[in-house]
Image (cartoon, rainbow, N blue to C red; front, side):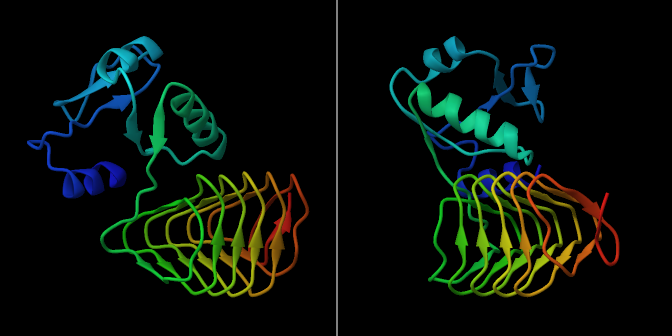
Length: 194
């Protein structure tokens, strides 16, 4: 819904550029009653015979990666979404989505396809890998690192200089006070490996 809200603001429905959704689930045919859902590669090719721009409306890192690969393979161009209310330093680097009320400080590097969700803060000199999901209201403090395909739950705090590995899941509301290795699930205050 947040992505759709941004798209409507950036590209009103009555404009020449139409908005479509893509979902392989054929049991639904429209979104918000007036946005058509396309269900197959062929349907996309019928509407967009050459190239098209797309953004992602899902948070799960593995699905985001799958969708980018699939849509680029058939001629799509990933268009990272930056909310009109996001505050993003000019020194930030990367192709990522930043939803409403996000803050991203100076010298931050964010990998391809990552999602900085509503109200999240990523402070100076942080490094986020590819397809990282930062949950709503999370706080990633200075010089912290988060590895590829890691999910950070809503309202989580990662303290300065902490490193969270690849393919991790950090539970909502956790406070990460020490480094976490690859592939770990952790939660709590302070955060503990499950």
